[in-house]
Length: 226
Image 1 (cartoon, rainbow, N blue to C red):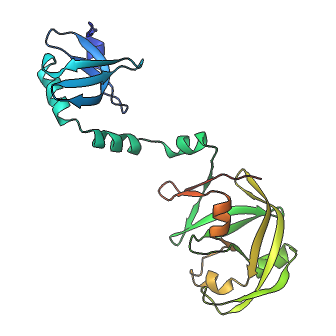
Image 2 (image 1 turned 120 degrees about the vertical axis):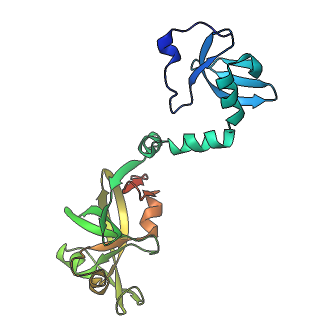
């Protein structure tokens, strides 16, 4: 099973994938990774998929110590930590959109009626909202008297609704989106003098876009175009 390798091969460092060079007591080597171990036996898998069962006591002392300390749960944790989220979500059809941070709050840019607007990301808000003044400036059609809101960071006030044929978030285009329309000036002011945003993205739109938030990388992964 174990073959002869050059000195250069034997000195290759282990990769994140777990492959390394194992050496038996006769000096022969194999490049593989541990996938399982049982009493007196270790299962080694080469990069071509071939798996060997090797008696642990036929390997070098260093390899035996490594096998003794090998813990499958820790290996799984290390593999998960090494996962590149961008690569993982891209393979599943998600598209990343950068988030901006303002006063420890995450902001997302959305294009509505040809204008790029800034929206506060709020997973605690049930509905997405656009500020009434901004909606009027964009000449959006507003259906008034849709309700009455209070307790969301500002004085109570009437709620309107606007129906948008299309919004764009990064490269994602979403059709037929509904936003509540509300005076957000009190909420914006509550975030400080330099705060500025045109609306709030709530749970409704986040669910529609199958959103996954990577706060560390400041990226919002979205899917659900159409």
